[in-house]
Image (cartoon, rainbow, N blue to C red):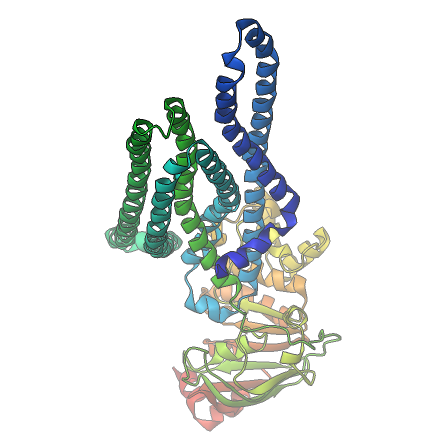
Length: 573
């Protein structure tokens, strides 16, 4: 019930369609209930009279029945079309909400969750929710009307025979509720297992070049086979429960026919029922049982939809760790002074310190380099500035303002990041450069490309700026992708710049080109640079050597060499 309470508000934008759908469902049910009753009335009144009266009544009776079934057909069209579209629109709304929430979630969520599972929640789970959104209320409403209506008519025809049927339906209901709990658990397991299949597939396809270069296709086939087989085992448990559920309910339905025939014969033998009423009873038993069958089948759909909705709710109710504070204000007129004051940090799921009591200041327009061994916390320092993670101690300020008091949009809009692992979106070069400033003019895009020393290369391509880069930029070299990412930041034109090992994966020639671009990009901007190649940071205003969760050494290139410490050791290497 708690899950249903959370689901019902999604009907709100489509209330009119929903109520009309139920009204049409009611008409469909009432027409089905009306026919046996009309037949019973006609056989007892009209069809007992002389032929002339019967023949005169057939035309208006046929016309009335024609209009009744035409109305039923129109209602069925509305239910089938608009009802399904209502479910599809709700699916769209939920998918949009889930996608937008994914975008809000902090880096820590993505550190702990698999993208294949996330895609499963976005696609297959929501399809089953859509089917439930349409069919569940409609089928339940139709079934309820038919069961109640047909049972009323069954009592009217013969109350004695209706009593054992009531006991059978009650027993069937309790048995179904007991079975329902088992089915619910198997559907939740199905969801997890198909998510594992998606995760295995996504992981293999994303790394297909590594797989093929190591000729490890058999290993990946075995990994996929395990997740695929686990999903089959989950489906086996699910279908075992469903088979037990369906067969038991079918048995109860058979018992209803048995009771009607045997107990009905007993009542006829004792003069408490007419033979014609028993035939009419058989007609209404068919109407009485068919909605029970629909409800049984609806149980499977409900469990699929609700298990998917629970997974959906689990995500949308996950609060992002990084959010705007209630009184957050935008960062404006940025000068670019950055100060780390006694900053400490550890991950939310691990108390091990990553940074401890780090303090430094970068004046407006100056540059600082971070050097030191891998894993010492250099990238973490850079991730804390745009609030990809929040400090666990101390504070970071920009122009004297605590970054936690600023809106995320304005904070991150003031910071440009060039990373070692460049991500290009599937599309054209123009679209990837323009990502730095949506709506940028053609001249702005060309200017950014020239500053990044990539314009001439782009113009040498057959389609120029409209050249397709492939998934993750696979059609371009590492240096070309890096320069496009630099052009993207030129277009953004931020006052603060983070260069995270932007040249460490490149050859010497590419590094030389890109270093010129980076120097131009960093001019008059507050810049933090992470570099393993110490030759690239010799001219920085200050170099911080990060080791043992904090700053081990600091100074200019010459000062650090003179100290003969960690920096000097790495430089000699």
